[in-house]
Amino acid sequence: LIFKQKALYQCRKGHSTDAQPSGVKTFEVECQADGTFSAGQSCQPVTCGTPTAPVHSGRSGTGALSYGSTELIECDAGYSTTGMFSGVRNFTIRCEYDGELTGFKSCKNINDCAAPWGVTCNDKGTCQDHASPTGVHLDDYSCQCDSGYEELTKAGVKGCYNINDC
Image 1 (cartoon, rainbow, N blue to C red):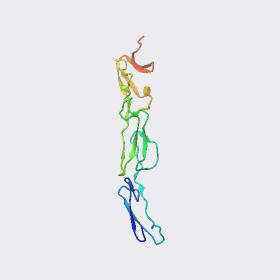
Image 2: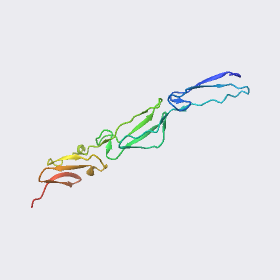
Image 3: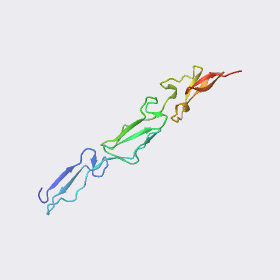
Image 4: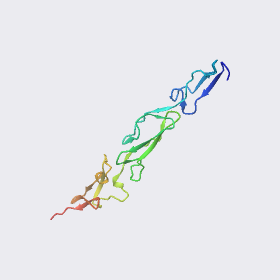
């Protein structure tokens, strides 16, 4: 460039001069008489803001996310993304070029009555999953036992057992 000529700069995808998704994405600099360029702006990664963790989950970070950055979200104890024991208990969100956050999932109460090893309350009652889990399996369900039976824990499993009438 020679004196008074201008160069046009175009920000890369996911960048703007003010870090806003709808912000200006181009700027010019002019060649000065001393061979330097006029003060120009710079391209900043677009910000997606500070994400709010979904209900029953927590963030691994604390600040705002900008284009290309990710953050791990962990489901609270007793929750998974499917509500099953085998369900994923964390997920990653990502700040996209347009300022949107993607990858959000919900965390659902794990159904302790559908444990892979089986919870049947000995066929003498009905398993009741608790609405507010602690993440400790034995604390997160109970057995509603038929008449004449009581809930007992044997070998780490709750069941309905005959009440000793003697």
